[in-house]
Length: 125
Image (tube, rainbow, N blue to C red; front, side):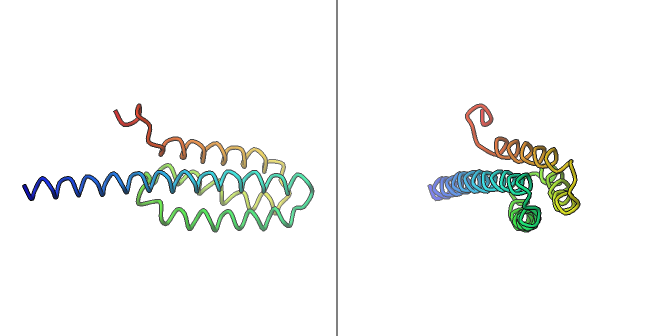
């Protein structure tokens, strides 16, 4: 009987951690998506210095998130976002026309990460 109880406790802990990680990743990804939109709004309005500052803040926040989330998420999904987020700062500083396309690609990749980590009945069964 003790083994059954321990089994239920372990199962409950695993389900709880899964729910917590899903909610955490969902919220952080939503925050990153809004940050990419803010970077583009600042850049498009001509406020390039603020856009560069927001891009640096984005990369720092992403690095902090990546350290924590690499335990929960497949590393391959995070590596491509790392590459693009590092480019955003240099594109914003260099007044590049590619900034918008990179921000859109970054946004779509973060949305795909968010949707991929959201537990849905069709992804579980």
